[in-house]
Length: 237
Image (cartoon, rainbow, N blue to C red; front, side, top):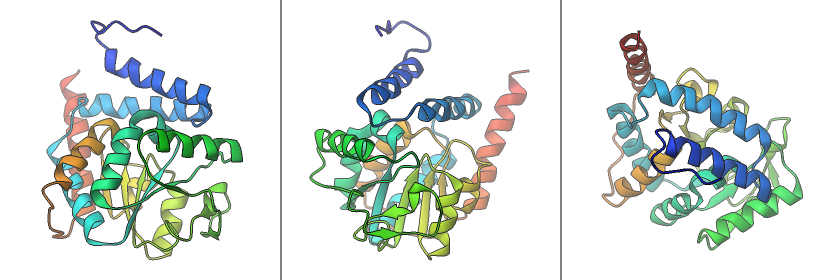
């Protein structure tokens, strides 16, 4: 689709087309397009910009990821929206990328691996399926070198079941979730309430400054993000 850059929703339409391309190339599911649309609604309420609360969450997340043995989980929408930036983040943090899918098939897993290798990754975890976490969905299949054994897990665009399972295992969970009311947002140790296309590049820049881990109050940060949404909603009336 040829989207004119003068279109007032150019970026939004471009991101949608990236997901459609991912569907056509086999690494994104049709359900991912629905999930993206849901996220867009929350991004409107945020004003489609990174708040001070999201910036603080990104900084805390980077500090934690750099100070522990970490892994960056990835689903189809991550591959579609910001594969190159995610690979850069992986290299800056020295943390591997692991593919983990709810709608998992061997074909999708291989397509995901190919996408991240094309984006510059040297290795992509997740295809080994040599360990499991305690949930019933296909997301239970993980890599023993990654999600299963690492201390800190970044779970962007996540579902609540796996976040809860990872927490039961004693993992430190960092989420990127535009919905501050989701189970993922509430159960994670750090939730970045922001669009992943803004959050990941910001995390790359912050990682270069090597921030120190100083702790984080996720509940207070979520409350701040919700206050921004409420204020923007009130101002629109």
